[in-house]
Image 1: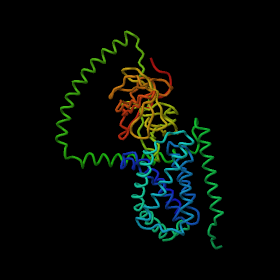
Image 2: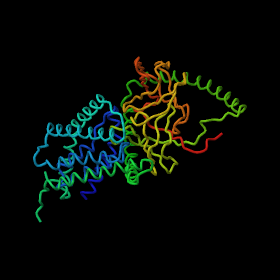
Image 3: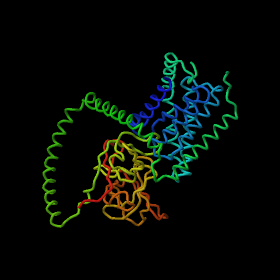
Image 4: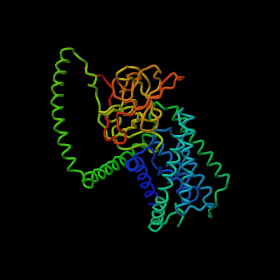
Length: 171
Length: 276
């Protein structure tokens, strides 16, 4: 049951990312829900499940975007791996820590994406514009992440209460 | 059996695995760029119904706000629209007369109507899952004879071209994407150039010689070269020109004729015999 809820949530988030968010954020910069899920799963899923979920979400994002297949698989997988590896050493609770780590991860995600796209696909990236876009992207993600983390925590509590499981860390 | 915390070696092998898999995916994608990848089609097939659902819900919410909450200026708007209707009725009558005249002329000269080409109207059901590419999803796929490299337009002009077609939906690369290039020419002067996307809401026209006379407001249309867009489709109009004395080409920025922030329906021009 936990897995079913997880799959439905992921499809819901992917659909939100590709439809609803563009209406709320009509400009060029849109928050990346998948990146926030990758960070959250890296921290809050048991053992190394978060890495696999993050990489899977990246792969699905690749399939639903016009970029090179595998780029988001790599960036989200690395983000998941990083947070899974250091989750015992860091404290990611509260608006400021969540905002900070999500901002940093957004910068890494954006840089990986552009580095790969420009080197493999020969795209032309404009330095100033690119940097500006990535920073705004990071800020958007950092602002929206505490709310999403809160919602995910509530969902996780609900799942543990209704269907005790070994997928998520207990709160 | 007690759970043992993963060691550094385990993380290293996971990192290597992710790097390896992503490299395989990227090389497979680069190698088989010309064909639809199986898993890409599967994912799109499963997610597109959810996208359609969300798109409908979003439309309903936007519609609800538009019709019930933003009524403050309705009366003024109504008066303005009545005047507009009157003006358009006169214009319509004039156009009908002109249309009749053109029909008669076409019959006389055996004029080949280039617009008489099969097409399919599609609804925009989603946008790119990342913010870095300019891609839209439409609700028509191979079931409706949509295939890769078909041009997508609206009555305002060029939207982009199909880069991936699944059974029930397709991915369209917009002309504003930095990987898009449309061979174009100025409608008046007939000077040619390449319209490329910038990743923002505007495009740039490259390779227009420094001596070519270009003014702000000049219209740019597709040249028909390249095999994707047919000749004469409106691409945009010039908004900014920079001429550097030592450069060979001008830097020209274009406002696209299509408003991509408000795109609901598009037309896919299907391949096939163009009718006489």
